[in-house]
Every structure is written in C-alpha cells, then in structure tokens.
Image (cartoon, rainbow, N blue to C red):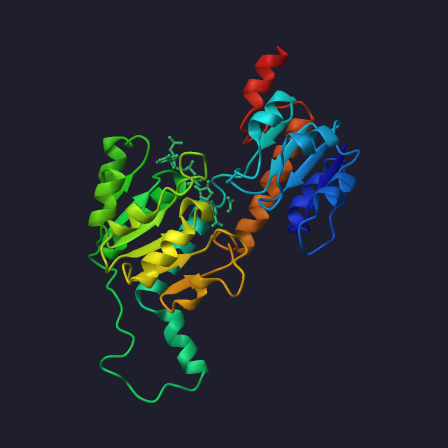
Length: 328
Ligand code: NAP
Ligand code: GLV
C-alpha cells in the first residue's frame, strides 16, 4: 500500500502506517504542497493523509485515479469535497473526539485571556512599562457568574459548556436541534435561538462546522445584537464570522473583546486591520495543538487510512457506509 502524507506529522502516525507495511512518502516542506506538488507526491498513492490546509476536490481526485482513501488529520472537513470523493468511491475519514478536550481547554484559554486582558497586560511588562500597581489599569470583565452562549452544541461546544460549571456561569446554547433534557440538566444549559443567545450572552463562543449554512453566520446584524460589553470567541472556522463586519463592529466599539484561533483569511496577514485593535487576540489555529492530542490525531488518521485500504470499516469515516452500500 502506497501512502502519501502532505506534511511532517507526529511520529506515531508514520509508525502506525509503516507497521502496517505501507510505503510512506512525506511532503518535506514547512508549507503545504501546491496542487502540482501534491499531484506529484501522490501520483501512485493508494491513500492520502491530508491536513486542513489541503484542498481536496474533483479536479485533484481526477488527477489521482489510484486513490482509495483521504484521511484528514482534523475533525473539520470543509477542505474536502466529500460528495466528489463519494462519487468516485474514495473513502473520507476524520479525527473527531481525540481533540475535543484539548480544543475546549484552548477555547477557555482565549476566553480568560480576552476577558482579563492577559496578553495586552503581559506585553507592557516586556516593554518595561510596569511602573506601579494601578487602580484603573487593565480592568477586564468577570468570567465567573457571566452568561456563556455556545453556538453549536456538539462535542467541543459541550466540553466548553462543562468547564463553565466551575465558573458558576449561566449557559445558553443554540444548535440545529436541542440536546436531550438530561444533557441540558447536566450542563445547566438552556436551548435558545441564535438571536436570543447573542442578545443575552456576555461571552459568545462558536463551535459549528463550516458549511454553506454557517458561512458568515455571524455578520453585521448578529454583531450589532450583541452587548457592547460582550466577548466573541471563535475556535471553529474563520469564515463563520464575516470579517469585514467584525472590523466595523470593533471600530464602532460595539464589542468589548474578541478571541480568534481561526480567521478569514487564514493565515491573517500582519497588516490586517483586525490586528490593529488591542482588544483582539489572534492565535494561529492551535486549539488542538497539545503534544498528546496531535499524536492521537496522527495515530487515528493513520488507523483510519489503513482500515479503509484493507477494505475494513475505518474507525471514523464520513462516507464508508454510502460507498459500501453502492458497492453491494
Ligand atoms: P460536532 O460534534 O459535529 O459539533 C458541531 C455542532 O454544530 C453539532 O451539534 C451540529 O449539529 C451543529 N451545527 C451544524 N450546523 C449548524 C447550523 N447551521 N446551525 C447550528 N448548529 C449547527 O463537531 P466538533 O467536534 O464539536 O467540532 C466543531 C468544529 O470545530 C469542527 O467542525 C472544526 O471546524 C472546529 N475545530 C477547530 C479546531 C481548532 O484547532 N481551532 C479544533 C477542532 C475543531 P448537527 O449534529 O445537527 O450536525
Ligand atoms: C482543526 O481545526 C480541526 O478541525 O481538527
């Protein structure tokens, strides 16, 4: 089995592939391969282990007719045209669950850092500007006792809500469908519409996948319905927020603070207007980046790939059943 991997990944992933007898080619660059480079790398590959920075569409699949499986080392799969894969019998796999808690931890890192102005304050210390204890210096927003609004109450949204219990917060959530009452009781969470959530929350945190429905879900109207003291956190995908509308809302001081692990565009150029606001904290898409979790993601991506190549049901596939049904 020949497998191409589109970047260097944690060692455990490569180990699992090699132990299964795969011949593995790894793209050696620090940046993602271009379309041409990817086609050359995977020319005779049976399986492709991809990252969220690789765009997988019908054109690429047609250039790689030997390909039987795309295994994305991510839970988000908006980089993959799954229908195009299914139409060509190419199995698509992802890595949910193993990154849920680490991503929720990082969401909280952003919530606390923005609410208490941690990065702004710390950078003044490095600049030698700490002169005394100031009664009016770096006043932030309290997190304890505040209302948290979770948009997208799936695996990560619920893990974020669970952590809010420790801060004595009121939790509102919105999703396509409410969860069971028992789960709501567990998190003390109440299902509301997006509009109600935006108007009532002190901290709004986004956890929906990027789809046609969630593209720019948070635009000018939604931003203007938030409290002027509210904080907006995005660890989902950049295009879930309309960036131009966010810049306008910040310029008009209609939001108190913003924490973004994902942006549109991504990466965000250093001269982007978002970076001019001191109350905006941007990190480079690292919410799942703990040593253990990245090893687990690489391992699961490799296991998914090997199972699919062996004709066995992969642990986490998006279209295995559809393809298997078609083949039956
Ligand atoms: P998940 O368990 O599928 O949760 C997503 C939730 O959003 C589901 O409950 C889903 O409902 C809901 N949803 C989908 N479309 C919606 C819509 N139009 N309106 C309202 N709710 C909607 O996924 P997850 O594992 O929590 O991951 C969520 C996303 O986080 C990923 O897709 C990825 O983009 C992002 N992520 C980012 C990082 C990072 O490094 N920053 C790390 C991991 C994940 P249904 O169940 O009905 O579909
Ligand atoms: C990271 O963004 C993921 O979707 O796993």
